[in-house]
Image (cartoon, rainbow, N blue to C red; front, side):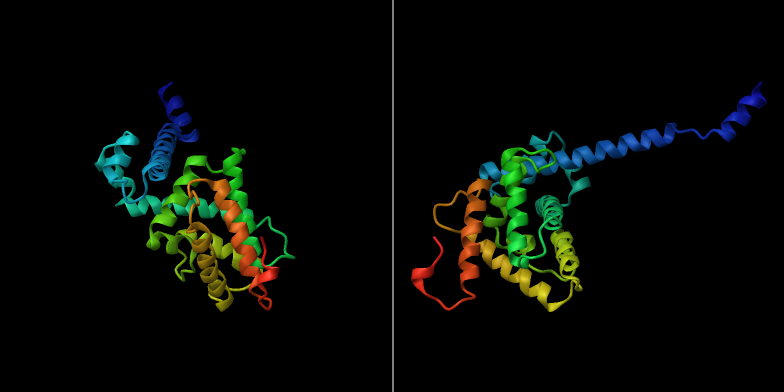
Length: 230
């Protein structure tokens, strides 16, 4: 009997260890996502500069030591939020028609992500995550650059850069890609730095991005104040 059970154990692999490993990995992913979500919510509520690692860890119900296992500092957890946003934008970018300019495709992709969050659509980023993202990138010039400008090494927005290069059928190192994303960063900076705009409101930010883009597009024609978009 013992030899029979031994033969069975050889023929049928033990999945117990694999299941345990899968559960541990799932728990780690959930903890990481919780930390990012809490960081986004706190930054949306009290601002990026006023949010500390201890506050994020406490609200996520983990110790600072556990936090450090996932992220070395506050900037790293914010980088993860920017990366998550970029993944949604890249997916939206792939859905844009090819008969529009690449700047307009970026506008539409970002607005699609922001408005889907505002409406609570299935599969959309959570409202708090988008609010936190917008609050962060407008309060820190360094993080704003990380979120929108071209970076040759890719960075947290590398997936959007790659999606655009695929759309244009060029290398990510093509000068057109750098020009596109550097001018896009300026456009977003103007849109999010307008007097009176609530950067934590994805709907109002979307409206402002659209109006700023209309002015940007207007600059490609001879300037006439009477023809300015309203």
